Image (cartoon, rainbow, N blue to C red; front, side):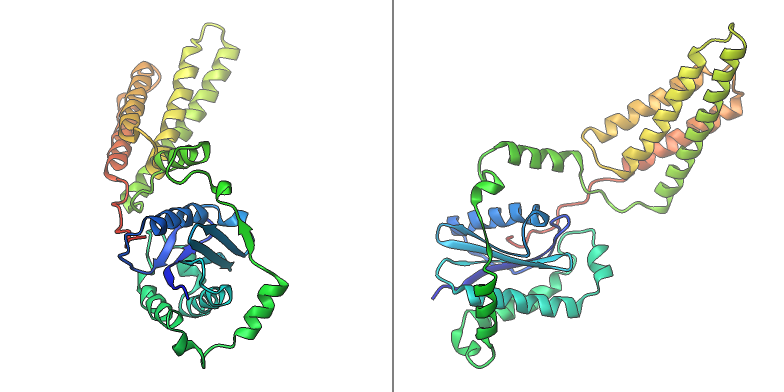
Length: 303
């Protein structure tokens, strides 16, 4: 009989791994199956709550419930009923151990890695049929699988694992454009609020400038553009602080330069203290963007 080789607990909405078993196998087929498991974890919301993907000599099985998916890899000859009993047992233990609030607010991968202890013990039990004979009632799960068999997923639905098909390219683009950043600090929140304040001030002055242009044709419309460019620049500083993008630091310096240019152009409509206020906040926001770096890579525990 086959054995369970790997198991993981994943948040269904975004594929964030919460816990996983530790293993040291270096089998090519198993490693490929893990790649399929990772691809599956990113698309869990597109599949039913009980599924199987066959990959050569290995099966990837998972069940989903209450926003969490329980996934495993086993040999192709490992009984389906045992595989889903194993996942069901992980599910029951997990939902009684952790509150949904903690699961939903998890930011870093493997936040609940301590659950690995239970995964390992359960995996050892299920890999030893003698220890299961008196502890499981398989008839109920057999009946359930007959009445509602697992949905069979084709590998083609997930794209190429080792190549770069359209699906895999878009996946890597998404990762590159939306890096996970460190948590926002209090100073970062303050800089974001101040940048929004500057944006609001620019917007209000911009509308006043439009009114002036309509009432007096001699007024320069370029001042209106300067105010609105300043508004957009301040809002974009907030975006750069909150979200990770490509060339993030370079963009922050370019936006800072734009804010300075706008305020220099508006020197006739603003006094020195107002210009200093806007530029100082822009400097503060740029510094906060620079300080909020992408999270360091967490150990992958051979996942």
